[in-house]
Image (cartoon, rainbow, N blue to C red; front, side, top):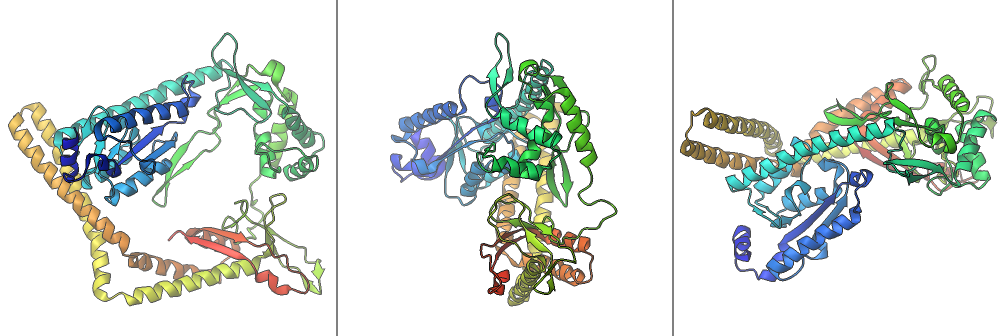
Length: 545
């Protein structure tokens, strides 16, 4: 076994015990397993898997894989974007710093969508990284190993979709029976196992008194969410996080009035995906056709009555208006652009009446964080706006200067890389289509087995060569920052050109189109003798381009 691994790794002169430095362990378990009532805890499962892999390492190499080479994660997401530890593994694979990845089974690496599986396969194949499991070593350069590997992933993906469907059906049926199926209990409740039957239900705990207080203040004292948050904080009540209450936390309780009234709901916020500017955006809009059933906790553990639930729904319907009604116009060009560096919430505009005069000057609109007790200090809105525009002006000058330093040959070469990449991608797709046709020819008898093997081998070699070229092009493009300058300069120029004469709403759209985030931080309150404190704030800006 050791000699086979040495040959695969091309490390014949390395000592057996030193081979572990070239191998990493990847351990993954889905967080959803805990939701589906698995008897064994997720942590225990990972420990068991790690012991199996370390025992295998000791038997083969004579020592364990070092801790620095172990990557563990508990995630429910099926995509690479949802798996940070997997991203780290792929970065090491790209850099060619490791020779093999050891996992309990190939499905732990990729059992999500086809695109992500293809990405993982491509990176492992191009970098010649091996996949090690206790039962088999996969060399993706070998067409039979590659076929076995792809078949395994395909079957895993089909099984995953089947399991999801069955579990979803089971959870919906559990809701029909009045069970509470969410993974965590709602604030004010404990989640307990139902006696003598399957499923879970909710039982009131000490925090239910706080929930009752929220609905009393909302319904009978007619307070808004911000006033309720201040009242709860003044009374010393702790929020679900153990910190101070905010208006959004209060709103979150009111949004779940149906559960507090003794109902269980299903599919109220169904996940949807759509393309926006070439990116897949996930959203969870309210589903008007969601299911609501009487919960097992209704009779003895509901916190509000059905009559109070109707009052909540009626009040919310009256208050359910657009953030900016049709008869009004947006007044804050930085809406959704600037966020608080302390709490991460969006900064808000605070207007002053024209009659408000301070030191003989009409007070300007200010930008402030509305989170209760947040220590961020407000600043005049127009000062923050000017700081952002100055940043964009300086960034434009910087990009132009850097682009000017590149010679004409390099500039043309950069464009050629992008064109060449498009051609290589088309070629790879064409080869894959040819491989599928070969399989069809074998099945229909057009090819005999020998002809099929020769043709597939030739196509695999051509595919590997094209993928190697694609990898090199990606590296070159990544290292060529001038592409960013070429793309960004006209966008920033257009933004600054249009900004001066734009409406507030147009200004807001322009800033949101190029700024990913702008985090504002200020702790100096200043005063009448220190007017320069108005400018004493930090602004961390990240561009989308």
